[in-house]
Amino acid sequence: MKVYQHWQGVEPSHRGASVAMGNFDGVHLGHQHVINLAAAHGPLGVITFEPHPRSFFAPASAPFRLMNAEARANRLAKLDVQTLFELPFNATLAGLSPEEFVADVLADGLGVSHVTVGADFCFGKGRRGAATDLKRLCADHGITVHLADLVQADNTDISSTRIREALTQGDTQAAKKMLGHWHRIDAEVIHGAKRGRELGYPTANMEVTGLHLPRNGVYAVLADVLTGPHKGQYHGAANLGTRPMFGDNRPNLETHLFDFQGDLYGQHLSIAFVEWLRGEEKFDGLDALIAQMDADCAKARHILKAAQ
Image (cartoon, rainbow, N blue to C red; front, side, top):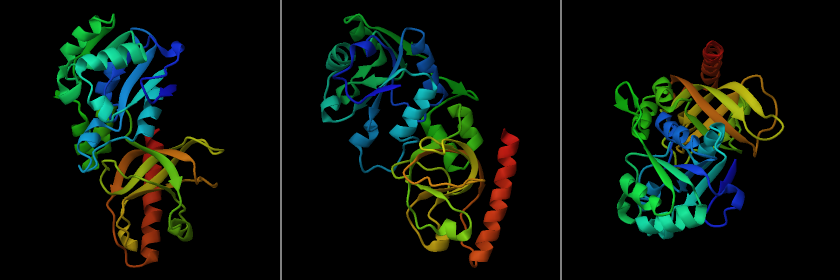
């Protein structure tokens, strides 16, 4: 998948794409419906925005994103997207009128041939442009537009908000039903305090800043090592939270990969949250903590074996 981070400088071979356009936070089933419709009209591309427009307009708001840009790109690649236009959402882009956005970005810049958006899509300065305006303006440039209906699950519209609510409750199955895949966090493995190694449970530590996090606690997980010599999928158990046993207060994701030996520092992992096992606890000593970790890993192994 070719990734562009601006609407200028697009190679001729990547012009003429049929694009799905939106924020695609989570790449849930509703988003996938829009992308599938776009795929029927030509070489498949996706237009999205980084940072998320909500982060640009309200930088002090609580973390809300289900995915960082890396995780979103990884998921879109799995959907056979050929070209990702990850447009910089800044004052310049936010200040474009609907007419300027269509002419300068879609037509002249990206040279798209077709656009598919959700029926509730808005664009342009002050969100003045509705989906019907997009269809009218694009027609002036020979670009066709398809407006996709909203997708439902259990007679309710699928939305990133509902997925956040499910994850906040630790309901990974409900989130998966709306996402069409396990919820994942993708990031680079960083150095931590290395306490897990001392306890006999070495972990891969990952940064989670800026994301709406699932319920704190221990999870059975699938871990995809995306880079380096250990590329592949592993079963594991992960702790998401602030590690009250050690007085930490910054959220962190620590994953123990079963039956794994090797160095993962600097490599990129994708952690899928399969099932919430328990909440975080403060134990009466390390022996009690290790005994609980033994039980957690045994339970996670059983769950993941049954899920295959």
